[in-house]
Length: 164
Length: 164
DNA sequence: GAGGGATATATGTTGCAACAGATATTTCGG
DNA sequence: CCGAAATATCTGTTGCAACATATATCCCTC
Image (cartoon, rainbow over all chains, first blue to last red):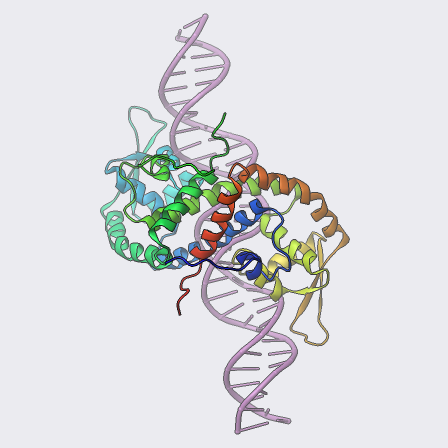
């Protein structure tokens, strides 16, 4: 069950050895966001290394699997979790590793259709369960309601205005 | 006051055009974290560009100002918000820009004392207020209680075990 | 059916992130 | 005091991130 932590002097300020608490709560949230992401993401980098891909490449492969049919480079870009310039080169790396293939669309020759190869699909399959375990190792010490609250708040945080 | 958002199909899953909601709430939180950080951090990158430094370099400069006296490279590394290998080179870049200076400690010749230059201090001063404004633009659409909740939850998220 | 704008991908370049490993200096045990 | 371990910084290398800009193709209007 969730205990109240009685620390008046904010958690992050203490971690950083700061002598006074944050002036702006907005800044405190941003830095907490940065620090938490940094830690969790570092684990991810380590996790993916043995598989020879990066978290971002994994994201792209997973989009390909989700569609089950060829996807354009542009569509991949739209569905990536994090902002991603330079999609063409990211895809090229996947192709170079033989995890994906690409070919020009004949109807619209601007478009490149990208597909998962069997090798790519096999790699994803190998990753699925260990990755689920990592996610849980990282965050399952939070209660279900806390996890949901966190998702909701993070969603809200990136909506600049609900009143245009 | 905090409203309940009635969206059953999760916000992020919808944003990414996913057809089914997330299986693991832990994964949903992680990806929300990644996406929110990615967006806010991109604004930061843009913000700092005209000043000729990166957010990470700013963090280091701010640590120097916070102490008001020389700080070792190692200490800077310990107090950075995000994990930071390769501190020596980061400091060298600050020195190259004449925003900081470094000199060997005479008592312990392993240590390099790093100090803020007047130029560095002036740069920080120029950045202070605009940055506060950016922080508020990014997040002040959240209510004060939401901001505090978010900070608390993000702190909790990075503590693997409170029960050792 | 020619031209202008929109769309989709590719490429040149710079600088930094990240890891591995090397070096220099101190500290501590015996 | 000698050597081993710990500490603090440095260096080599690889690959990717990020931006700017270029190219190719399509679409729409007149």
